[in-house]
Image (tube, rainbow, N blue to C red):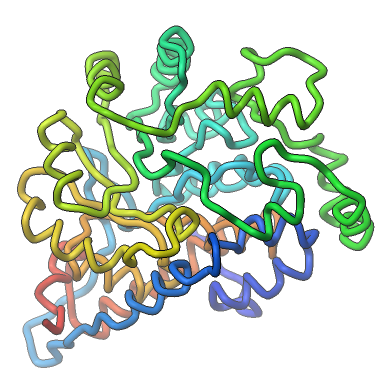
Length: 382
């Protein structure tokens, strides 16, 4: 299928600006913010853009293909949609919008345990091609039941998180009542009145809820009770004792997200993971940490022949994806960028953002005269 992006919004930044105008401030700040002083969220993108590529204009060059194989599946380009929690809070029905767009354009969509559509619904929309990201439950029976549902939904890849042993300190979320336990305040309610499109879409699709988790929750819980229940139900701290049963139970591909060190990469290899995603949770967890591009280069060089190395956090354009691939990533993921697209353009935002990124990446590939994305490391200025 052919899609054209809206030329009034030709960049992620232009989508971000429009999304800010259409979303209540509390929802936009939840999407847009990092932790503490927002240092690492800015460092992520800035240091990706320090990476330079060297064109080879006089080589025997035919054409560029973005097609990329990952875990035996051919995708149309080396970009997927990262798991994002509370998507429907930021823009109503956004996980379904993005899952449909990803399916239509043949890129992976990763559903978070704490997103606002269920694993069954997303599987239906993607014909079983969506990935599933698991927040690790404290109870074994709950873990096992969620895994059975993901398997029944035909999810080819299970992603588990390493980088949320504790919630990041996010001042804007605390002020807006979106910390755990959450609470709505009068400021938030007044913000909704100023965003009629968001409000009408919320009325149409219903208030956001943790759809995958609804069957395990008591009905009628207040938002404060819900927050306490979620906090008690999941444990973000991973160790070998928690990982081994997951590897035994899950027959598909298993990916660890949130790796930024050689030590954790070596553990992931030892414990039988098929891939890792070098990520710092979009700069939302550790403001004092490194950007993602720095550990990526070292990890890919040392371990890229032993495990599939991917990356997210900080990517905001097609050239950014080319820089990450040239630095050793086998695939990339973007979260905020796609949510800006949906916040800006609603139902059209998913396809718009995918096609815009595709066009940008295609131009970079053709400009440096690179035929395959797997060859991009040959064009890296070292």
